[in-house]
Image 1 (cartoon, helix red, strand yellow):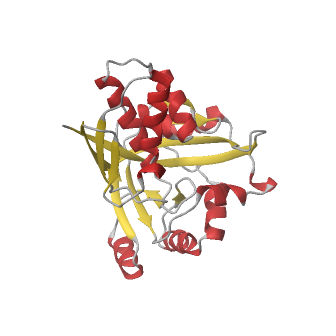
Image 2 (cartoon, helix red, strand yellow):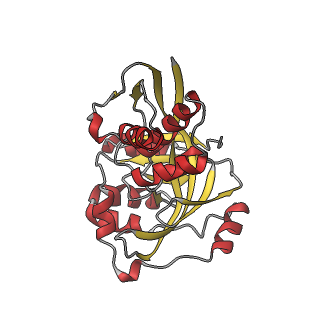
Image 3 (cartoon, one colour):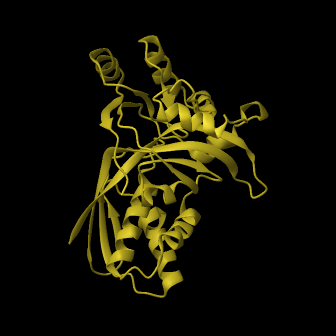
Length: 270
């Protein structure tokens, strides 16, 4: 039996260049793993994927990734997997994508590494655009659909997540984008600012669209602005975060409104 941790991520910034001919959007983002983790138990047995929150196996990204791995390699994937979910679902934190990547990496190792990291990334990019990032984690610039990665130095941050009781639908948020939302900062300027610890450049137009669709996300965002921090939406939400500790005003405000709060640290890459 093997126990592995599967970290969440935040998008320190997320911009959309425009819509591609394949129907997806071309993005520029900064992925950053954090120490909010799902715990995964992997053991030998017939292929089965179960979760603590009852996600149907056929809908689970881990199961889909393992089926694709079996198709590519022709190998039997005889592993029973149980995922204890701590990362909220539908929050823009990449829990399912992370689960798929770390399980595929471990299974590939247990089977003698028949596939290269590049091969694994190709499988994962079919399953989820941000899943290839989780093969290594840390901090990376993401381009394309999010699967074209450039590793960056990994700043050590304390981040507070505030998450309302709503699950955001990624496709719905992307479909709400307008022409005015398209545009990206200069890559070198963005990288330089992050490496200097200057986070004023960070933005996420998708998050602003998510607030229009899900009023609960907007309520969290405006509350955090009101108490004097600089909030950002992770991915397409519903998680809103800021760089800094969870002080008593945040904790009290969240408690009275039924929001979840997690104070997390940066999670290093592998």
